[in-house]
Amino acid sequence: MPTQLSVNLNKVALIRNARGRDYPSVVHFAELALSSGAHGVTIHPRPDQRHARYADVAALKAVVAAHPGKELNIEGYPDARFLEVVLAARPTQCTLVPDEPGQLTSDHGWDILRHGGRLREVVALLQEAGIRVSLFVDPDPAQIAAAPATGTNRVELYTESYAHAYAAGDWLAEWQRFALAARSARELGLGLNAGHDLNLDNLANFLRIPGIAEVSIGHALTVEALEQGFAATIRRYIALMQAVDAE
Ligand SMILES: CC(=O)[C@@H](O)[C@H](O)COP(=O)(O)O
Ligand SMILES: NCC(=O)COP(=O)(O)O
Image: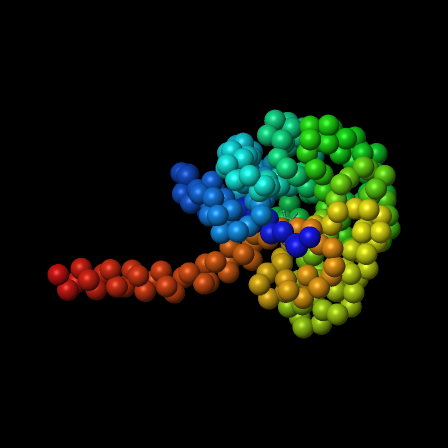
């Protein structure tokens, strides 16, 4: 099956929150993402709600429901508030991430060997509600080997180290580490997702690893959209101002 793209809208939400009104609208950008061919949308509400908010979950559920076959993925740390919101909305997928409350961004995968018992309980709770579960993991064969005992459907490989190596021009060893981790996951019967700092430069090479079901991409995708639209938008402003001057 071809790899699916889930567009992470956290950074759209971050800009929205800067002005205290619904502009840019996360719902509107979800519509744009889905109607442009993305298979799904992702948000990662954090406890401080500095970008995606818990209230966005239900709003996005409604948008995705209007696009049959498309998916909503909610990422986050499984504290009581997060689980309450996710269980109420029943997204297609919930990706559990081991974040600290004030964390700038996700920077490591689960230590499943240590937290497997708790993860098993949470995975079961979410699956009983019909939600597919993915666990955010480092490309570490020992952690991946521990994942099936939690009952999780998938793992999401945390790709920051690959993205960093790719940007430095020395990616082969890191790519091989991910390829090996991916193979272990596949052999254990786990579905495979990947994400963090993937972008238009590093993605094609990464996808030569077989069996990646889904990539979720947000930060770079938002910056790339800005870069690709910025000059054209400025030209429209200049043209508009010149037209007024010429009146
Ligand atoms: C789990 C993961 O890698 C993404 O959720 C990423 O952390 C994006 O979150 P931020 O937009 O908060 O950095
Ligand atoms: N799960 C990763 C994700 O949703 C997006 O990460 P990033 O592209 O914002 O780094």
